Image 1 (cartoon, rainbow, N blue to C red):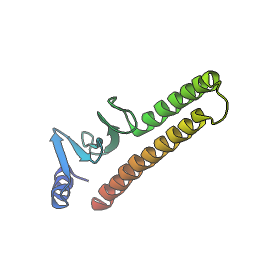
Image 2: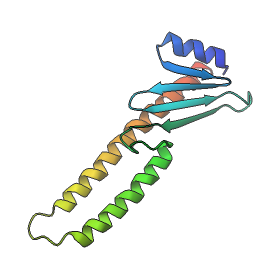
Image 3: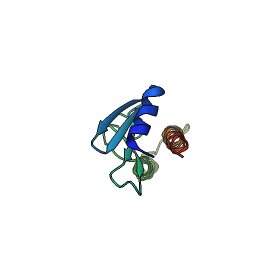
Image 4: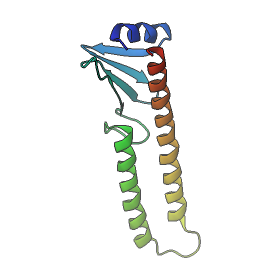
Length: 128
C-alpha cells in the first residue's frame, strides 16, 4: 500500500482528500475524516476522526470510539437528572426524550462507523 497509489485511486473515484507529508486525510460526509498514516512503510495506520459540527459530538473533535463513550456518559448523566427532576403526573416526557437521545446516538454512531469501516475495507482491497 503506497501513498502515491492510494492517492491516484482516491482521485480516480473522486474522493476529497488532503496530503500532508506522509499522511492522507480523506474527507467524508457530515464532518468525518479518515487519516491514513504512511510514515512507517511496514505498519500503515488508518484512523478515524469526527471534526467540528458533527451529529455525535457537536464541535468537539474525537474518534468514533471516544464519541461513543462520550455520548454514553452524557446519556447516563442526563437520565439521572431527569429521573430526579421528573415529578409530574401523567405523561412522562423525560422517558420519551431519553429514548430519542438513545436512538439519535445509536443511529449516528452506526452511520459513522459503517462509513469508516467501508472506506478502510476499500482502501485495503485497492492495495492488496
